[in-house]
Image (cartoon, rainbow, N blue to C red; front, top):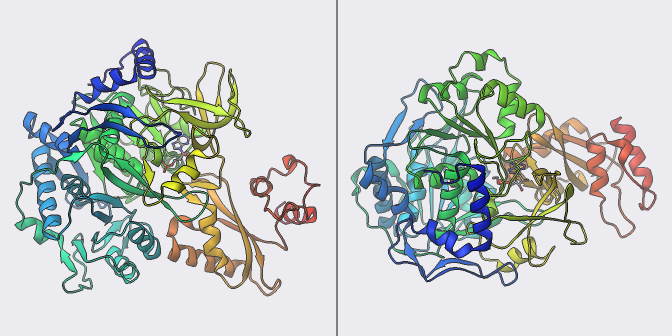
Length: 631
Ligand code: WTA
């Protein structure tokens, strides 16, 4: 049950969490099951980056997610699984059934020689088996690396290779709306470039005929059926890694953020319980995919650690009709609904009768995550979905933070449109200017950093601690730099304004501009490319590419657009597709040859009047050319 049930208790918890950190966390940690109690609550800081929480403690996170609830309420429903197509049969799993499935899966992994510390890659759709598999991996002490089922073979191979996975779990194919994604075929392609893979397990979802590589490929369905439903949990150290999750940054290849067991467990659990004010008879539904951090923390771990009942949905918001989300809310009497602004905007654009015909009276709390929510979407969500009686929690956090960091607490602290508002206990946000000076007083605007480690912070980038240091802790030494900009109003409420680095947030998914540019540069007609984000009515941000061609005149812009998007789909996945391109003679550069992305962003957003001083550019005439093409 939530503990922070009043504004006073929030303040009290916040004060204690920052002043008496150890006692605050010890008390919370004691509510979990441990094999051996920890010796030291926390050590390390953002200077030495040797961060540890509950060191010396031993536990298995799945005992906390499953076994302890099975003892208390074996027949409570853990998961209502809703298939892509509503005419297919839905499935329900009690905590007891969930544990049995996890154990069976764990025994299959063991049988395939997966050992403690091995990395297991999941490239699946939102089937219950993905949830079983992730927990099974945690049960035997392996490290899961879930790759979103929308990534391409190349992107999958890159992620398998980076952490040297010897096993990949996939599906034959994945129904997604009207389409089917050929997950096994893509996995086969990826495996050609991923020599570490010894075993591929396939969950038979549709039964389509697939290629089977003898001695490498096995159907999970049969293996699970004959596996034992008991599996002793591996006893792990608090700081052993639980999972790796890849995310894009402003430079280089995607980075595998590594989270450790105990700290992440506490963070996912606490933030779930307090922010959403989840009560034992509530029905929680997070619409994210387990391929992203939101699906890790608020489908897999947060709700299960709290013994919650939740909905897991395989499909998309608009299939078979744009009423689907609301039909599901009605069907399962969802009380807590957590989604992304991009979905809200997409559904807002549909006929309002899609909402009106559903009974949404079960809803109590709404949540938003993934990108700044614009005022119009917030108002629509509040009025049409929440019927002005459900608090909206605007939850700001990141793959790196493990769980929610800044958010109002449902019904307890005030919701303010478009504001994440207040830091959760143990989170110490500060704003700094570009020179690294801390901006005190209110109102204020600056780069958002966090002081002092909290339990859920990612401990490293897999295999590259130096990059972890460089990426997050070098801009402002001693502070974690989030990559986001934020404002603080006169009452200290935070409003996140979006990325200040070269990361574009497309439909709540992070895409590094450098990654996209690298792919575009491979095209023979392009000499140089610069990619920026620009405001997009549904996606939040779209991808805009400025392209310098190898031979002007001979290029057809429409053809190039199609070819580049084909290439990006192949190399990264459809989420990296361009929304707009413009062919130009050159890119605005400083005298030292650096592309002025600030100007490109403004041009892409049609903010021609506020370009600032362009006289110091090497080639100011290019700016005029771009403006005349776009005006
Ligand atoms: C953005 C998703 C504004 C932000 C959980 C952050 C948000 C990035 C919000 C992390 C929010 C997430 N308001 N912006 N409520 N939530 N963001 O790693 O730019 O996929 O840095 O984690 O999403 O994206 P990630």
